[in-house]
Image (cartoon, rainbow, N blue to C red; front, side, top):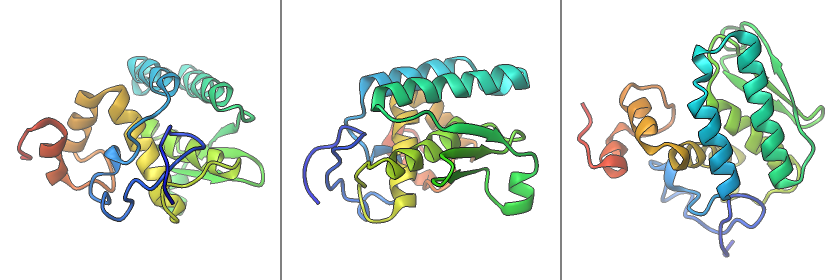
Length: 177
């Protein structure tokens, strides 16, 4: 696949295999509205919100993204014990256009990852043939683009799965602990 990446439906070959240790750099030209919506959600500090406020903030983000990408808004369902029972913090069902999240770990990266699966089910072209690597790269690139310093802190704290901590130096120039 070749072409340009706009973080949406015109995705070209960004070196999925080559970039496996740096998924936060896989999407280089995300839509500015997507980055802005994500920055707004990050700034709201969802983990510090009440449960109803967090649900509203996540739904507002999904609505803004759906307007931007011209797709239906997925339903977000909060499933207690999702991780304990299934080993996942989030899931997406293309049959019901529903994102399932564990309320015990309300992660913006997980929300964005599952939302990317929603875009995939609505025709988004993949960066590579693996839908998980595509969703992983899109969600991490989106968070990194919206707030690189916070992303680096999360990596340092071990709160970002599937990223090589040694990549921290490539993110900020810092040496990992």
